[in-house]
Image 1 (tube, rainbow, N blue to C red):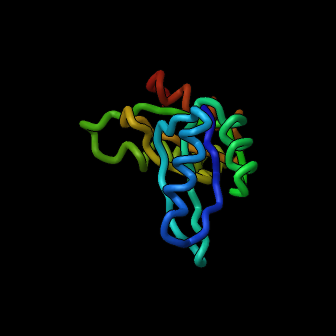
Image 2: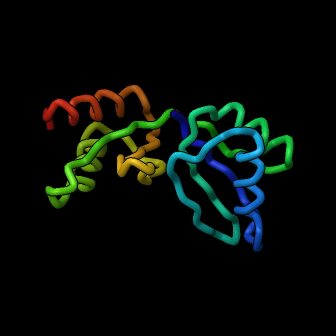
Length: 130
């Protein structure tokens, strides 16, 4: 799985077009979200085939900011503060979180500035090593 960071026009129908383009290309969205900042739509979506999605979007004229590796982590929903704890571990290891959202399986999705270091922190978290 990878994250597609997509630029969208801040206008009605932009998200619909993006969804249709990806759907027509056979690319399913597994999680993500959209926000507007400085009148620019920024979408981040988890996809299985990021290169296929990028190619389809760009051929339609939609800019893809980046394709990123992702860290996928299951948090214990019964324990409050899990997001803060794993994010603090990233910070203690000098890893900046660029994007955060959840997928359709309620898993935490992180895009970080140093994937290899983040992967170690994430794997340790899964083993209970904090």
